[in-house]
Image (tube, rainbow, N blue to C red; front, side):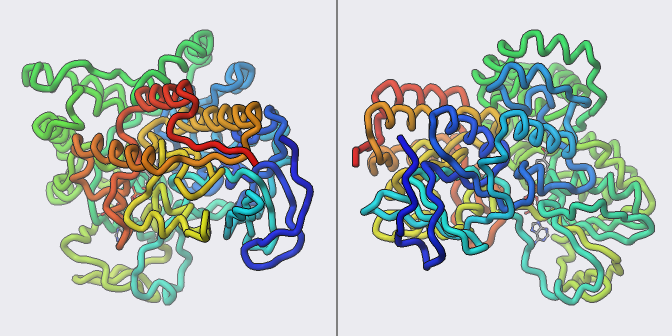
Length: 548
Ligand code: NAP
């Protein structure tokens, strides 16, 4: 397949001549970069459009104090190049944001990817021209790009969300969102800081800010379960031993449900005695990380099993936090453990034992307004110098919704997905030919080590494009019945778990008006991969591929 020459087209609303490519990739984070590698290997001319002024996606934007990945370094990295995985040296068990960003920049340089990336270029619209079988993409800066293939690498947690609170514009101090943090270090020394939100970001940020600030007031709507990270430096011999078996570790990880080498128990909770259960929880607590919820194989599906694991964590919180009232407020009781993304922390609960850190329970006293010098709740006024929003994202569909994507007949993707996203395999959506979604809704994506899910999807897309090249096919899209069946399957699998009972971002519940649908595929990465392989082996069953 050759690059098309620049030809006038019907772009979304005017603009100059379009720059023509074979493929446009939206985003230059983990997904976008690896997609570029694979497109280049296919001989396709590609351009990645990246909103930031650097590569890295999530790890470019999330520079907040304490930002760290809760998947271990040696696993949260690309596997596609043996040289890369051998040469890069990680320094800690869990990688810090700046280390991951250095790694991603290293990848961009090592594979000479920068020449195919347009920075400071945010895609604002993408329209499909059926007659010419081209996607026409417009950017916020008014540039136009055209390509046969449009590939979203826009990320699942990239559409940062500030909740609507009366009076934010009247606040006279600086305020921040964790997902759009300034590039210059923010100094909280001597400051009174209000933090809204106690999800993974807030739980990492609060202890770190508390080390600097004069006062920290945490505004909590829902408490979260969190497991200690027990982060530590990564000894050279441990890293060397792991790398000696890297390929085998990666293969094993891909054969798990989450793409992470956790210690998955094969036992149901009820098969153990109470004493054995407590021992098992304690063992996992001391090991640290999200491995905890795999202590028994029915924690996500059996309420009693879940209650038992949840109570263990609540007891740990009560034993850690000295003030009994604060401990009660920090101990989650409104959702099953793990059904809101479990957090991994360093000294989160201990932080509340410090005299300058306090907790405000918004369920009791909601925020009524942000005012010039702080935050007002139903019961009192909190004077603050700075406010941090750790209020999360319009997850999975948000980044796509923010682009005006139109397929056949001018249908907007947002309208097609008004009652919940509809995809085949989380990879494509009928009516949007040649639009591929890396870790799209209905794929395992954010339920996994997302780098593993990204590599699986990018490889699949690359193989599909290769197949199309070989067969001289120019257009691919899913068949409607295949898509309908997949959506039904995604919902059925989710309904067998406790996840659908929770008001989580997995369910779209954090965004007012968003349809209540379980967004990722919870059937397991290993099962999902098997399904994809069967689809490919059956000649891309469920896809319609046609030539010019
Ligand atoms: P989040 O999990 O969605 O948490 C947002 C927090 O803000 C919640 O406590 C939420 O309360 C609160 N909130 C939202 N709107 C509010 C409002 N109007 N008033 C008061 N509180 C409000 O977002 P996040 O912490 O940024 O994490 C998102 C995801 O990113 C994580 O689940 C994880 O997948 C990923 N992440 C990973 C890491 C890591 O690897 N360590 C770190 C950060 C993020 P409710 O619960 O009541 O809605």
